[in-house]
Image (cartoon, rainbow, N blue to C red; front, side, top):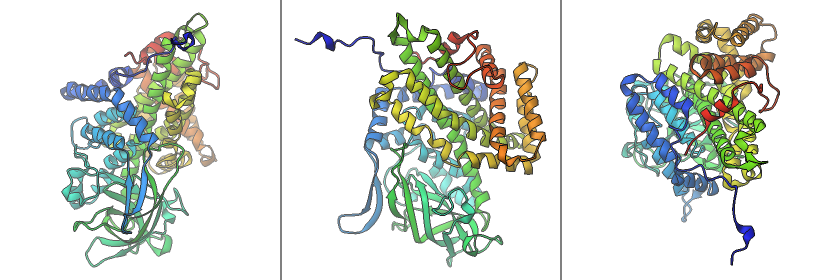
Length: 553
């Protein structure tokens, strides 16, 4: 006979079997806002299908398996031949295959492509975040390759394909390919101009042999990589007397032979465990130049900007999933005579987290819409908005996830809840593609060198002037901050934070329900809150904010 103490009560059901897209009102509204009416129904259909897959028990199982069984490096085969292959659990391949077939590597050639892909990226990342890395780099390689029309014509159809094929073969024999990127080296990190990898020209124009290393090369199982190396031409000073130049390095050459791509080891990382990050050595590695010699940093910046937007979207996805889990738990968990969601203090915490999540989602989709518009003004806007958003949104991810985990109490602290995996993953996007200081300095360069970017940014936030007095005051303070350039480098983090918050406030005032925009402006711009989550003014309509963010199964 079963012991009575084993009766399980007051445990919330799993948040499973739901449509991740349709349950996210802020995301649905953003898609409706930014996608032209002609493709809106099509976009909703594809995103809802992806949302149901992301919220399924199958996808949740794949995510857990991909992290419980991380990739494994095989440097040699049984006979001693060097192969440098990385083995992944089948769940990893299923996650990647579903993402590729859903168009998450194809934003550049369809109506509303960037918004649709951004929304899909935000939805599917909630199933498992690690495999989003090769998706992001494959998508982002397109603008860099377009600097060379011949290369773009050859590779872009492969990169944007809806076909995923695992395994190393010549790219021309595969239905679709994945790309990675190699920029940082041991001695330089973000200072890529100090790279020491050398590129020696070969007899055929545009072909080179690379010798050197890459300290961080994510997704080393990819079919090709964009890397930086010092080429002898270009007319600019660089390490070893060369000039930073961008190159395409295929893993397998056209004749079927393996390119020299020595994977020395895989990184043992805090999070992002399902994805492999490697240290790679080049020794006479064949490469094709992308763009002009000495213009490598500029060439690869298009890729970097696109991956930085994905860092924003990835952080927004993790915030959304964390908040959805916290609200779901509180909606079913009883304590002290009632449901947690009805307790004033818990409601304050949940509403505060929901504000952060909605602000991140709204900003991320606005940036994607700017890519779709592709006008001079929108490109100028992105030049400031992307580093500001990347700086701020990615930094907010970790405290949001940590607070959401705490809402589940001890249940959130065990691996089975999925919250520890989210928490380990949360810092990644703040570090990848340039950490906080790199983003702040990039923003400063744009302010000093590109006045059109500031004009575009101010025009964007100015569209909401007069609608909220706290936003108006914040814009005024921002203008004062921008007018004083003394000691600007030491305080540019403060400036990046202010710009991101003002931009988020402006977007929410224009597009979010009044309860959301009012609470955001009061707390984030008006200063009416404490230093921790759950310190919103108690007079705000907190229940309405929480209900809006709830994912109903």
